Every structure is written in C-alpha cells, then in structure tokens.
Amino acid sequence: LSAAIHEIRALPDAVYGEPDWDLLVALRRTLIHLAAELKVVFGERRVVDFVELALGAQQALGGVDEPSELLLALDRRIQHLLVDEFQDTSHTQLELLRL
Image (spheres, rainbow, N blue to C red):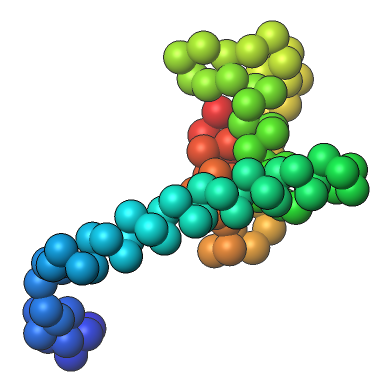
C-alpha cells in the first residue's frame, strides 16, 4: 500500500494545455454524436445493451426525491435483494440499488 501511495504522489498534475482542451472538446462532441447514433441503432433493431437497460430502469423508477408509482409499488413488495458480482456493479446500477 505504501508503494502504491508513493506512485500516486509521483504522478503529474492533471493540467491540460489549450491543445489538450481542444481535443477533449472534440472527443466529447464525437461521443455525444455516437451515443445518439447508438440509440437510433438500438431502436431500429429493437435491442438494448445492459447500460441502456439500467438507464431505462432508472428513468422508469424515478428517484429518491421524486419516486414513480412503479418505484413505490416495488418498494412495498421487495424486502430483500441479492446482488451477485457486486464488484462489477456500475455507477448506474449502484444508483438503482440505492432507490
């Protein structure tokens, strides 16, 4: 652990120059476009991946501050939930579990 902390301290600061920011902005635009294209392909093929499935579930359930009727109904019925392979849980999946 000490060696790992020492290595982290030796890492350079996360400082980006103007060319780096230009590249990051271009990559962000590209990723937004690609994500939109992926949604179109999913719609055409009537399929989804696990990420899209989790996002859809999150949208259907609402949130802690504004729960949907579905979330309230499930909250009354579900007493226990078993999570297999928790170490592989994504941020979105973790947010679903917190609901």
